[in-house]
Image (cartoon, rainbow, N blue to C red; front, side, top):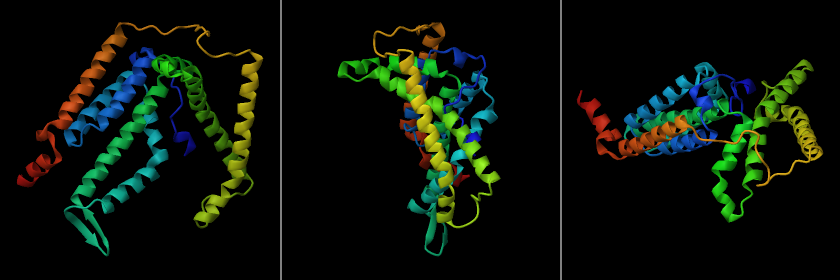
Length: 280
């Protein structure tokens, strides 16, 4: 399960997405997230899915490698679907005992699956195509306007970069601890919920000890190298925009504007589509 998490991992290859400025990719991710909340109809989700598919293709990252990140949240998606099926009121489709599944609940559940799936895949593409150092520089440059409000932008960007970098390390450490406990006869599958939670205690304790040890080693290494953050720190490879970044910005803004238009036109509403299917 832990090997299926792709967030925070970098996939080494050469593509247009890899060569883009990290600020473009960060802004593009934000605009893509915003676009998913601009519409609530099949056409809008089809446009977002097409845009995401094009980005995945030109990123040269294997589709299976990206999609396997959804396995780790399959249980959360299942719970979300069940809640929407039974909690949303509307026209009944199936009724049994005290539960009723409505047409509106089915539609909302399908929309939510697409929305959460595209949110996770979209955020994974950023980390898969951007090195931690470039991600830190992009965050620092992109959030530079917050310095007006006395926000320590460099420190915030550094913390976020270190957190993303430690995700695959901690997942690998967790996998090693679980295998060691299984070799000692630990059982994580049988028993009720409380027994299963209790069985994970021998994993969490050494994992937290290892995480604190790594954090302490990292802090000592940074101090030994006289690390000092802030505006006086120079960059070995300063970020510079190129022509492809300008083209990417134009495409992003056109996509966002198109998403807003598609989301607001009544011709693309779910009621219109349901009426079309009913008349067929």
